[in-house]
Length: 88
Image 1 (cartoon, helix red, strand yellow):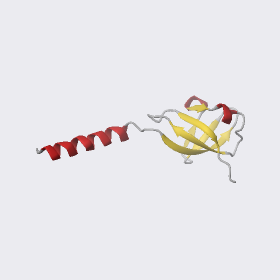
Image 2: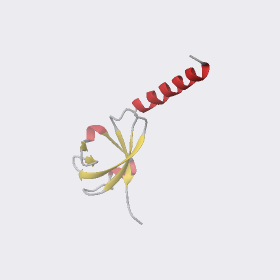
Image 3: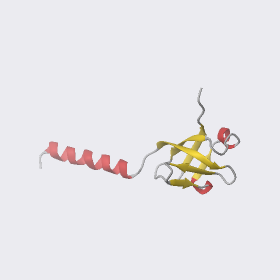
Image 4: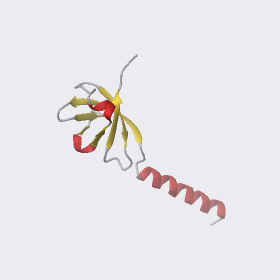
């Protein structure tokens, strides 16, 4: 194996490792209920409060039907609710 092939193999392995770890990603969801807080993502996944971390600015401003912007925390098991989305 040439050094160029080895380098390409190492690069491909690194990219696959990052993708497998599910790095942070921006996700949008819809608030299904306020108490207890549940958010629907992609109409397939409903996140309960056990999977949500809510910022101070978002906690009192969310209502049923609101669209929220979240960060999927690395690994995909928790979601940081940043704020609700508003149109200007």
